[in-house]
Image (tube, rainbow, N blue to C red; front, side, top):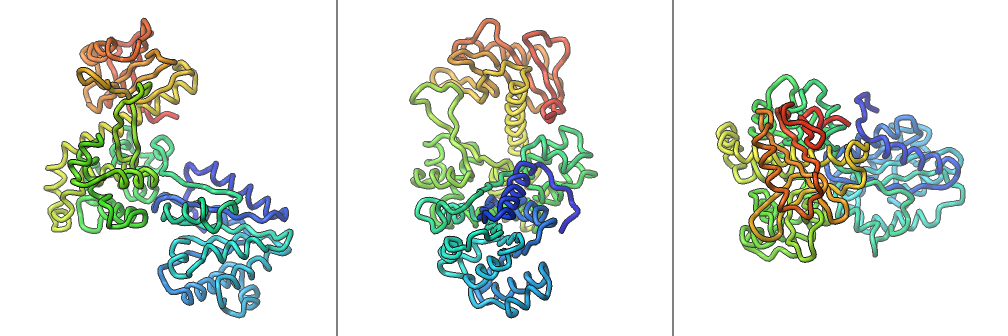
Length: 462
């Protein structure tokens, strides 16, 4: 159905193909695929079905009768006139449609993909219960793989979670997350590592965003076109993503905006958003939109911080959100210029995340001690002190690292600043391993057995 390459979805594809193989052997499969809009669910499933006997149906926000008529058209398109004629040209109900697919799968394997299922739950009362009733009474040996796919994560969770009509029925559930920086680089292979990280900081791990980024233009031109102009995909997409997950009530946007402005502690967020935030924080964390962070090896009672878990949404809230009316009025260039300090801080945060991921890969490869637990750290008492990368073994600090998004190579000054923090981290071993990650790399003169240096190319190496 498409000739564009599928990137970084090999495990998910293998799981889908295994499910289809089981269905072909007479064990019917109910598959649920979910994830945020733009994450590539439809693209993955289109690749999956291209070598299968399959019906691929994308729901719209229309009445039940219209959707059933469109489903009959999809049957004719994908299976041919003979199969469509067996259906009588249309379906009276979703129960009739699902039983029809079960009959078609009685002797030959059939894959049926229902994409954007939340639209069907809106247009057909009790849709999940209809699926349950049909699924629970499938004839033995039915060779059907039914895939339910949706972007409204909360609604999909409600269908299959405790109390949901489909609880315990799915044979496979796949939750697709945005693509991580290292594999995402395949979308923009012509960009150097630093330029790619700029693109990733704005686009996040969303394939459609990354494909919209012009590899022959600089980040300023791309930001102006995609985020600083009315209708730009990076300007528009966040609102539709959030609308599928969150109601307008509840103050969720105010909480996200406060975090985007750097208010990361509970009291700061509550003050900035001017509301009670216990329930909004819980909902936002459940949706995967924010994450609650504690310093690695934190003592009991340490205060948590909250951060927007998605680079694209963090960019949108920290750089664009407050000035959307000005951008829509044609002042995007001025807004992006004024918001450049926020953009640079966001780039620094994305680079720090990439450095931590790189340190974890080095530990997995045995190039750092494999028993290290690696994450951020900050002091929970006394004078403020932060560590971008801290690796601990038990209660001892073994790896101390800093990541700096600066073009000048890091040298003796940055190393001395890092070494000065040894006394503040939890029980540092003697000697610890020091590591520096720099956009412009690290000077060779400071490297040694216990001083490691990395650049953006290293950070993006698998």
